Length: 355
Image 1 (cartoon, helix red, strand yellow):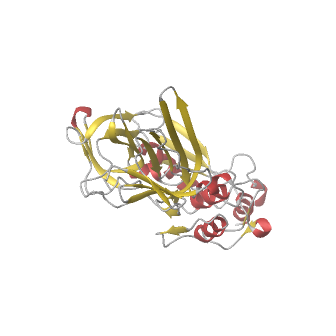
Image 2 (tube, rainbow, N blue to C red; image 1 turned 135 degrees about the vertical axis):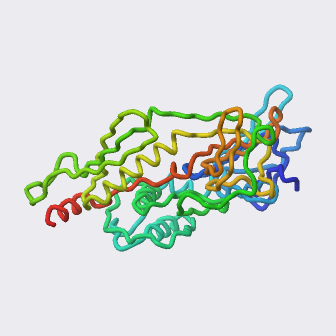
């Protein structure tokens, strides 16, 4: 098996020979997905080929799994002198996006995000892991009818300051911005075919002012109304103020402070976005480019050099026009800090008012 060949295993059969390949993975997208195609080289070649929608599958690049999930669409087509097929699908975590959250009684209490995610995901045959050891025990929360399983998981993940994304084996992973360094990076003149950087200033501010409450301040309970915390960003060279109403924020100043710090760090991180195309799916050690991995980037003509950018997403591509390439989006690690939220705003506001 060549390292640049894609194989899909479904129904007990391995299918290779795909000439049009797109596989996308990332830490800000769920689920991972693929779209592949091939053209019949001789009459009858596809007669025994069946890849029915809904069947479980594993997609590998070389020997490395990249997506484990289900086929969503099988699309055969014909034209004058041509017979081709296209197949697309998503990882197991697609069911967490598509399907309803199932939880007896509809009320969650005294659980970490890991316990909650494992219980919600188990219904759909998805396992959940984490490498974070200090996950908080979440306060009581109620599920709303119509919410998907991932709606709940995402909300709890933000409260717990973790990212939720899928791995190559189809499982869900709860983690923070990665610290693992790839064996190599991207250097203009060596492995970068094209690149551009979006340097922006329109979404950063000099002052981030976080208010705890917007309307119901509960001043009648003895507090002095809206509390405020300000974070300054020296990267903004002129006065630009942003007022943030901290989500529900009732558990004192802590949520407001975290929200303002998050807003400043995340906006600065996203003001420097690198997008590039490289000529290989793999780093110098032969490992596939992996989301949530740090890489150095050197682009002299763009006057840019960074020792550690985080891979946000990677798309593996192969076709007759551009050959084998990978498109990557990279940002500073602080761009991926999860947004702090308050899960119990009303209860928290009364607590604060009574202090």
